[in-house]
Length: 444
Image 1: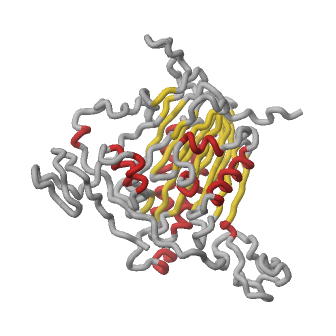
Image 2: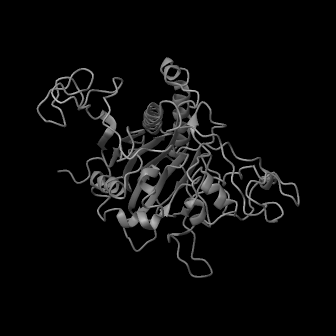
């Protein structure tokens, strides 16, 4: 179900702070347009992790800083007083410090808002397999998952009991070297509109690298499952190729998001989209989040509200969220109009303000790089997981202690946590150990 962008009713005018009433379009005191969605927060990570490791690509990284006047040693995880770097190696702007080019405070409002929470029935019947997908449980001749005796016909139904067979993408698990991912339809949706790509490779200097890309289809759009699949494949393929060629991981991440956007845009021109397009639907769309891990560098990139988290192996050290949502709730918090608890409790919280798709207002990939000073685990996920473990601290309590050694098991545990919590959405989780182990490490 598609919904037109809805604007927030502000508790007070963001220009002059005078109280306003619900439904007011303009401030009665200063005339401020209250229908304007606040500008999205600047591209900035929530944590800076310092260290001495180099990414192995010939880039000279700053040396560790000496202890500050308060005696805080270098290499200690601190709140994000210092941001990461963008794709060009330029430091990102600070948190609310007013730093940045002149005129930032007068930036134009952010892109439009897309509300992606159509009402869901209590349960769905199993659907016939998608003929565009590879053969799976619904393959003709397979045994029915319901009665366990009948054979499955070419349309994906049991010849004995008539039950439709589950789709190939209802539950997917995959490992690639040190990285693993699991995706599940959840308990309320009729199909899985998430998709992921995982892989591992070697940089030109022999340094190992692992990557994961997770995409969440926008349910109010046409063919959201195809959008997430196209985006994840395009981004994953480009990352592998670019890293092997020697492209800096952060530039590779930026280029991968652009490639994913182009792949989703192309779906809008396909005949299948025209056949399925309904008057209330938009062009195919999805969100994206990705991570690349090398022996000395962690890079994340995203558009939308899928997230990446850092969970150190030493649980005495604080975990951190590495991405900032492109969402209505995040903009309300960034503008100081609501507390985080208030914003995420609002029914408009998950209205996304950034996505991949032909009807997106602009393509603005966010990327950030980090240099962790200790081993840990990177969790890349859709909101199907973080709805049940929103903060980094909550998530770290669910991540198994041996996540870096058993990434597939850890991804299964995290998906299970979401399903145990209610499974109201598709849920996809990728787990990457940091640092990336060398190829063949520990083998005879």
